[in-house]
Length: 496
Image 1 (cartoon, rainbow, N blue to C red):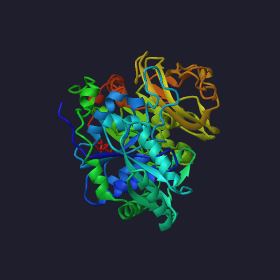
Image 2 (image 1 turned 180 degrees about the vertical axis):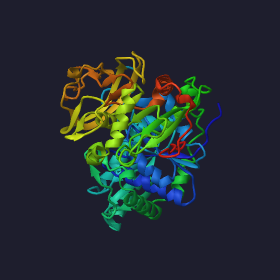
Image 3 (image 1 turned 45 degrees about the vertical axis):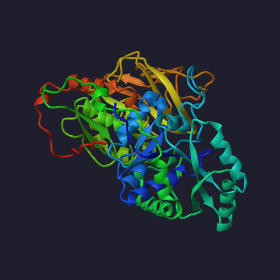
Image 4 (image 1 turned 90 degrees about the horizontal axis):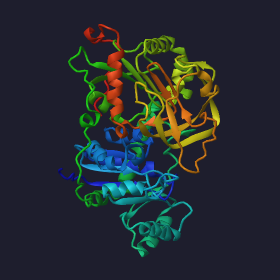
């Protein structure tokens, strides 16, 4: 094991809404504008913030989620994602010490929190403090966070939404009195606006030109208002990290399909409607022996030639339902792929797309489900056990997953007759009476189809990729191994 020596820092906050994403994205963009290779990371399961990180840095935004992937994988995954970078910036989640609502036996009270990840990475922390409505009280807030857990090195603060030079002086002098360094002060700027909707920020892929402009403006603001040289000096104080990088080849094993005809071709849904995904998924599939291609269900009318399996991850299909429904040729192709027994995996948005209808608009009809938008947000981590053998998981496989949606199925799962995909193990005291599950089961398995509301990070269960590739190889038609790659509609997923 060779220690990883990369400058790194964590940008956290006292709570949600303080401006972490604004500051972190701005800092990433400003450092990248200096010509530095910046590695961007996000604590937790959030898919959307990393799309802005990727715009800021020109590298994939990656997640560090100790609930989904396990604490032991955090440093290796960080090292993998930061390979070749000169500095790494990790954006936190919620408040600095906010973790899972109900830790399980053996877990610390802040399990899954930004603080827990900072400890695992031995990284200094900057606290983004919303200065609006604060005066000298900012000192008590910062001092309290600095002393709460001695294992977390709170190195200073960045002030956000400061109203005037006089306001900045009051805040800065109060912090100096308690020995808390100020690394920057961002003014209120109503011109910087990243639109939100029912599940958070609008992904960058859905608003590419405005998102690019917003990121550029954030970078310019951070360059003017933040002590970037001080941040780099602070990041350089992080000691070498004693870990080897996560290796997708070692993690996935192999599916045993190389040398038996052409590689399995796994197609992943992308485009504006399906923006939720982790970079490691494509890396694991490739390591397991697959060629990974993409399809945009809003634009492409056919699946790539020789498609052996389809993965439809998360996103916002409800925002694009009319266009998805109008693409009848692709919907028919997806249904035909599922009908011949090929693996078809749907996560949340994928579940909705594979169903019969979404808010009254026809979808693929692979499953006899109808979905509608509801008033209530279903959100939280889940521990689940595979209830049925499937193309994705063997029965009994234990996973940690995340659920995040406002839709509900109007036909109870039990009425459809398909075996469930998962059995949910809610933590003690959790409220599961939200109308989204029949008892403690979730999702559907039908032939090669595996679909549910649960989002998984495959790095946490790396054998899933190899199992999917093997199932795709087994299910493809005889003679498919002799096919040659087609030229139309194939777009490889870049190694990320």
